[in-house]
Length: 63
Image (cartoon, rainbow, N blue to C red; front, top):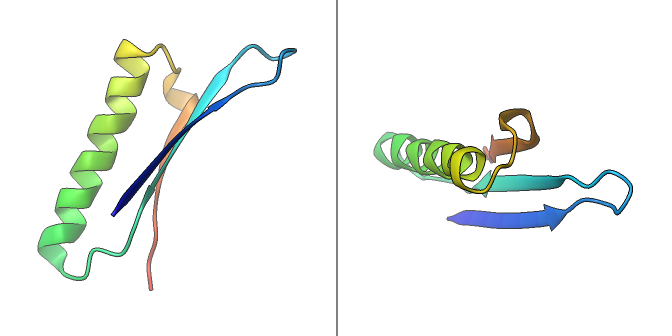
């Protein structure tokens, strides 16, 4: 499960933030797959959408 949210920054800051939350994978194979998806989304946001790398984060949820 992936949750993708693009949150516009305030008018003062004029920045965008990207939060990618990776859900419970269930098994090691899916852990790696979800991790790769999140990294790809983070990289794409930085390259194509102009979200600086330090403003694009992904977090994994563990049980």
